[in-house]
Image (cartoon, rainbow, N blue to C red; front, side):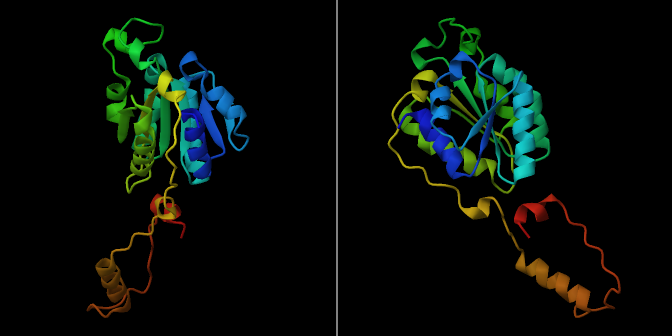
Length: 226
């Protein structure tokens, strides 16, 4: 299958049903793939910041992650503020940016940021936990899964893949392996700390057991599925 179909199929296997995007020539290859993937609905925004904010909101509401597709160059810079907010709140957002074909880079083509000495991956480095320009279709399956694993790690964060047009239309034969369920509902338990807490509450650790206990539970409890 083509790389565009592969990426959408991977998102579908991760149980996403929406992607948020701003149309542009560098991601045109995804339109036929979206039409052929009825399980994923594209939501078109007027501005890349809006698309990234919607992906962030989708992640928070769904318990999965949000996906955002924009063009490179100006699309990347427009999305920076929204990704900064997602990073601050540990919200998982997968940003895919389309780039000019690899053999066109640096030639001054339309929306080619590299012609001005800019690198989209480096621009987003401070606000993403993982970023990579996929210059070969043979590397797509590896870096896609690596990015999603990093995004859904203990400290969730936005991630970014830059995919040139010629890679988007290339054929991919590698199978996609979905993330383990524990990535979506981590249930981490420190056994020693738990035993100490039980001992303190029961009075077995010495001293009088508390009569009233307050539990301050944060967002991690919701994430754990408990």
